[in-house]
Amino acid sequence: MKKLLVILLCLGLCGCATMPTQEQIDNLNYGAYPTIDYKQAIKDCIGGKLYDPYSAVYDFEGAPQRGWYKFPPLLGGQLYAGYISYVGVNAKNRMGGYTGRKRYGVIFKNNRIIKVILPMECPF
Image 1 (cartoon, rainbow, N blue to C red):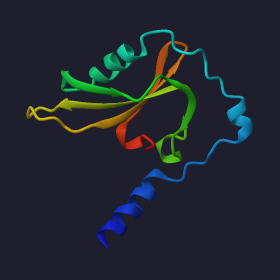
Image 2 (cartoon, rainbow, N blue to C red):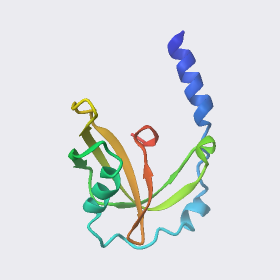
Image 3 (cartoon, rainbow, N blue to C red):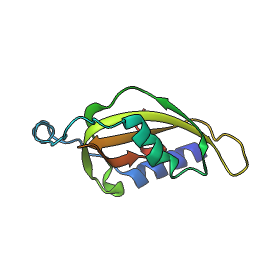
């Protein structure tokens, strides 16, 4: 019963994300492919939010690929388009232990990071 309640609560909080139409996808501005060192840019961006950035282990899942991401309505419903790179990050917490791998999505547009998709928002 508890599991069902948690699932219903999560669905209620996230809302149903409506997919963009094919016409919207065709008209998205993805910008230019990143020519900067995208791995270093990701490390600088995510590392700045970690308790111990020097302990971080990054597991890059490939070069940025053209794509889009739309947040559910209750999270703003914003649609982002650009070049997305996914990375797993494991770093130490305040207690000195590793937290476990967390997956982030990073969206680049015209050599800038425009959005970091947090672990709980990341598609699997």
